[in-house]
Every structure is written in C-alpha cells, then in structure tokens.
Figure 1 (cartoon, rainbow, N blue to C red):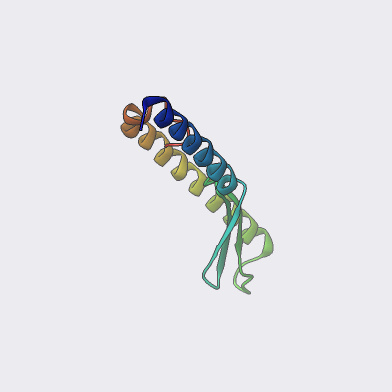
Figure 2 (figure 1 turned 90 degrees about the vertical axis):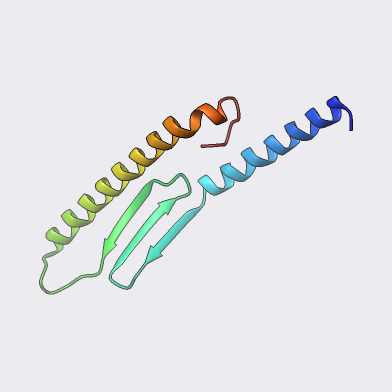
Length: 99
C-alpha cells in the first residue's frame, strides 16, 4: 500500500470516528435504579436527575436534592475530563475525537 492510499484511509477513518462521536454525543442515555433516574447526553453532561417521591421529603426538598446531585455529578465529570486531557492530551494532540 502506498503512502497516499494510507493517508486517504486514515482520513476516511477520522471522518467515520468524528461522525460516530457526534452520534454518541447527540444520544440521550437514562440510568435508573428504582429510586433515582439520571438522564445524560453522550457528551457526559447530566441533563436531569429525578428522585422518586417519598412521604418523608417535601417536593421542594426533592427538587433541591436533584439539583445538587446534578451539579455535583457534572462537576466530577468536568474534573475527569480535565485530568484526562492533561494526562492523555500529549499523546492525542492533532487527533480530533480522541479524549
């Protein structure tokens, strides 16, 4: 295989990776365990936290708790992304779609 063919193949693979990543980013994922339901985009951003109603908590308390969980989860995910970029970025510079 000549160098031009290899470059074309690499470019095609890069386009396919970017398309796949975009598809994942636009997908909504839902995790639930019976009491808690979390809705998250493929970008790893939490969109919504829902806690099953309980007679021990008022609706306002549950709503505040849901918001606090959402913010804390997104904060933790941001820290993971920053650490990943700091550690792995040196290996993936110039390769879009990786980390």
